[in-house]
Length: 118
Image (cartoon, rainbow, N blue to C red; front, top):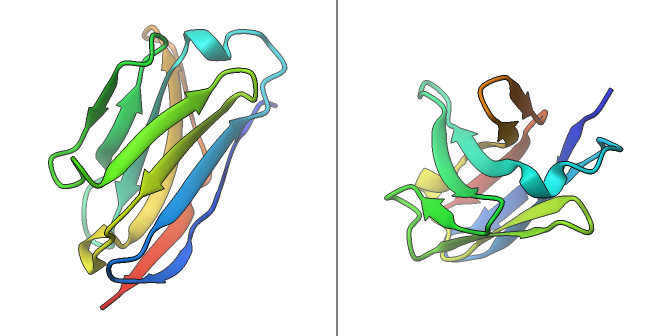
């Protein structure tokens, strides 16, 4: 079964940086057509969109991360990245990778923990 595998999470001090990766194990050739995104969920809060990137590499960001985070994709590697700079404790959450196409195709990764200490 195809999986999205996230990596790169960890503990970092405020002001630091992390780079998350998400690789799709789906052996098909549709990765480049999929919308890819990062979401996050902090304890007691709803899951929120962090950043998304379309098949044509158009990007969008949540208000709280605009200017600090950058999403990118490498279709050849079936991987997306989230470069996170100037992290603050409010960025602490489990970060999830998401892939979708149309109204039916929608998959999630298992999540990776990001903890930012003050």
